Image (cartoon, rainbow, N blue to C red):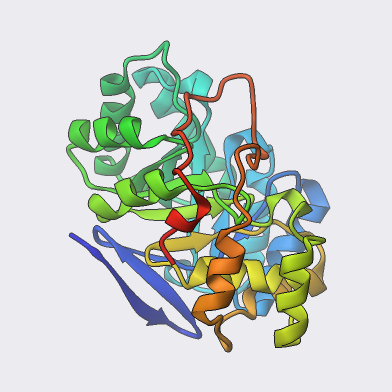
Length: 294
């Protein structure tokens, strides 16, 4: 099944292998305790319907508290969580997924991801456990995170249930052409984490100039650049109510082809922000940043 775009309330969604994923979500890494509750409440108030968390973030209870207090129906909110790379053996995976759903105060999540691949655990075992979680009702949909293209191909081949997303770092400084092509080949959404480059892009002079031309914030320009790429969603993280509102206000303007190309040309070999010790072998960047699909 391919990718298509349909509205869900006020915000567009990506349809990927049966999932309807709101194109802008709230990233919650490092938003814990009361700050986490308030960030999710602010996002829901601003119109977000996609909330991203993970066991590793230690904020699933805070996210769940905000969801419960929102007054929104369960079907109105798309909730993602992730299983950490040390919990990918089948028995560990099931316990971790059950614990995440319980901490969220839900009976299921909408998307369950393998947070990072782990070469010490057979991929077939991990993907089998991921598919079992879907079949057992812990999640509506399944996917992976931080999978390079070849590993994504293997995961798709092993899965007995369609994968719907690969959540990866993606922003103008990081060429993700190879992963994007793999996602599109499989009808999978790429959900961009760290879409603002952990703030590194906000002071970029090219981004700043385009922002002035459109009377927008730099973050809005970056997120709009992502939104104009087929099959791409984004989960910008913020705990600031004003910024949360700005980050979702990116569907009422557009960037022309020249602006898209100027932003894509910012990619460089050392553009990656997320570099944990356990990262997989990343895909080599394309020969030039002009290879970005815009």
